[in-house]
Length: 213
Ligand code: AP5
Image (cartoon, protein in one colour):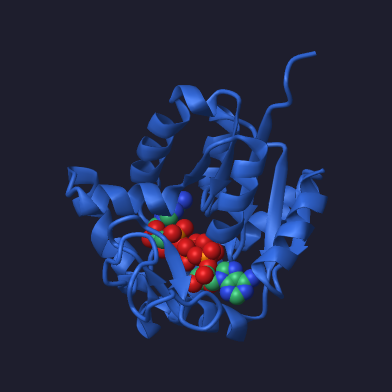
């Protein structure tokens, strides 16, 4: 028998901690962490045509059109390191994307992270990121050693444009309307594993490990 191929999706509302947990689990399983949000933000930062088209949607908290996201995802999934498995964070986000994914690379496990809305808002509004190395902090739960500066390279931390209050509220509505129906979709397919996202990152990581075992 060959090595286990893990094809995992992290599903859940904005700010639930998908990126934080995906980084931990991907490292433990030795598979790449593919975040469509990170791929899109890199395209925005390098001002590619796709990034320029995506930026307005992202800053406002709306989904980027399916064809643009699919283009960037296909390219990433074709890379050699994704052939032995991957952890997808932030894709799919609607039923059309779920069908597209099924056609390219069917996934076996979907972890659905759950957290009350007021906690999501706290986590999102407290998030700060390093524009140089992309490290993620939180003023309440994961503060940098020197306030406002990245621990790794000292760069001044910034707030993501879509972590402003108006964009947060749009993102939560978009999640409820377009992404939450995927919970039923994957539950009916027998692939959904709910994960309680309350508590510290270590506590959540232990639940994630138990769910993929
Ligand atoms: P994306 O980057 O995917 O954003 P998101 O889904 O809204 O998720 P977030 O990154 O906000 O949160 P997270 O769950 O990863 O939480 P994190 O670990 O950072 O997408 C951004 C945009 O790109 C979309 O709005 C859309 O425009 C576009 N896009 C992306 N994919 C797309 C697609 N497939 N189709 C169309 N458009 C797409 O944690 C949040 C904060 O909480 C951090 O500060 C962290 O330190 C803290 N934290 C984490 N865990 C804990 C804990 N256990 N306790 C306390 N604090 C915690």
